[in-house]
Length: 286
Picture 1: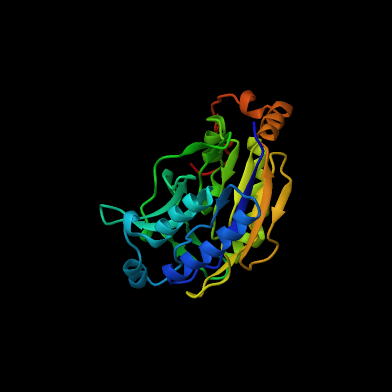
Picture 2: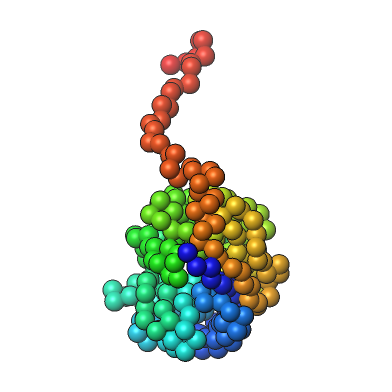
C-alpha cells in the first residue's frame, strides 16, 4: 500500500460563492504545492448564509455551481483528488442538499455524499440551529477508493453518530472524513475528543477540514482543522481559526496495523438489551 500526502484546507467562507471559490482555489493550490494528492475543503465551502431568502437565492444546481466547476478544474489541472467537504446544491425536486463531492485527477466526479444527520440543536448561549428546515437529509453512506486507500464520507454533525463511521470502517474504509463548520461553543467542548475517538474506535485516519472565525453572517466557527492517525494521535492541526492548510502523510498500512493490534472491528458481537423494570418501593401508590 502506497503512502500519500493529504491536506485539510481551513476556510472562512462568506456569503459570496464567487469569493469563496477564489479563496478555495488559492488554498488548494497551496496544498498541492506542498505535495498533497488528496485535498479536503470544509463543510459549506460555497457559502455560509444565515438569512433564509438570501440563502435560497444564492444556491443553484450541481451543473451550474461555481464551487463544483472550480473544483473540477483544479482537480484536473493539478492531478489531485479534490474533496469539496460540502456545498449547498439545489436538487431537481427543489430541495437543498448539504452535499460533499469528490473529484478525481481527470476532473471526473467520483462520488457525492449528502449529509445524513441534520444539526437541529439549542445551545446554552442562546444559539439555535435547524438545519432540517433548509436541507433534505441524505440516506446513503459512501466509501470510495483513492490511492490504495478507501475513503469514508461524513459531514460535521455526522461526527456525533459513531454508527456511521463504524459501518464505513466495517466496509473497508481506512480514511474517514469529517469536513465541518463546528460552532465555537461545540468545537471548544468536543471537536478534538470526538475526532480522536472516531479514529481510535475504527483504527482509521480521520481528516477534518474546518471553517474558522467570525463569518459575514455573524456566526462563529471553531477552526482547528485536524488530521488524526489510526492510533488517535494528532499528526497535523491548524491550532487557530484563520484560513490555513495542513498536510500529513497517510499510510494505509498503519490502519491495518492498528486493527491487528486491537481487532475490535473483528471482535464485535451482536447482542440484545434487557431493560428490566425498576423495583417498586413498598407502600408506593399503584
